[in-house]
Image (cartoon, rainbow, N blue to C red; front, top):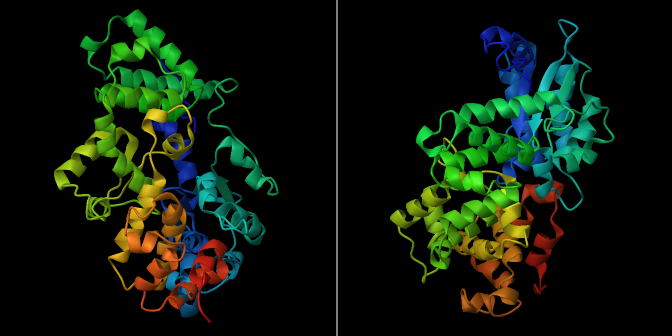
Length: 439
């Protein structure tokens, strides 16, 4: 969003942000979809989160009162209860109908922000259900004074084609001078904080800034990533000036080449990336070390893990509650799909088998954990790809997956009785439970 500030013309003053405060005052709920957190991309969690934030909004006191007077609605908004019902029914009863009983106090509208609906598509159901498709269903149920603001990448705008909308590109570097201005303000501010002894001359610095802006093309992630590598000393200013990355993929390669100067250095951190690739949620250091040591032959110490995380820190996000995940979904795609990064390929299947081994140690598993175990086994496909390398008695035959599931559960049918399986069925996982099962 444009601040309205123009460098060297209008000082950055709090008065310039009054319009932004006015907009912020109308935000009553928000939700962030992250590819690295399956629960943030799940529709039941989405509905419960929206309702919880609406109930806490200072401008929707009447909505809070409606919920408080109806214990059945409050019960329906408990996640454990919500997953037992169709999400459209839960949304209508707990959000749409109560809001429809209210009247807007002015001619303005209230805003619900949803970030990253394109990332939620990574976890869409086999029937195509996702947060994006759900928003298409619910948009007509809300009062006209409630509006959504959605963010997604350009390729995913097709998700909302059926919904009346106005599109704004925040990376339109060619046609929108505000994007150029915001990018330059960030770049010049951060460059000004770099040690001057690393800068050859101001002329070279200006030339470098122009090249970075041109190569970024409005991509703020590219600018922030490059500056972070320079600021932390991972890439020298001289190297960045001499080999200014032409795009984000090139930037990742530059970081890898500068960081991993030998195959051994890469192999020491690769297991961490494998586990993060396969994970359905951000992982704490404690869980990470347990996953890395899930096999008898692998023993990673806490100091080795901390060293690997320190090396990878520019590529990771560390949340306030201790969770660790990739800093952006683009890096995940680069690891998995980029054919030009042959030296730095990670193995998601290895990560999935480590998750499966770790879950097995927690047996007997609850229904959701059984379902997750089946997911990791299907993704790893140990019989086809691992040739009995891990747990030979369970990975050397086609029936090994079913045996594995039975050994990890007191009753394998509990996996099928998982309430999510009723409304968001996964045929492949379900088939795994029935494969060669005697009747």
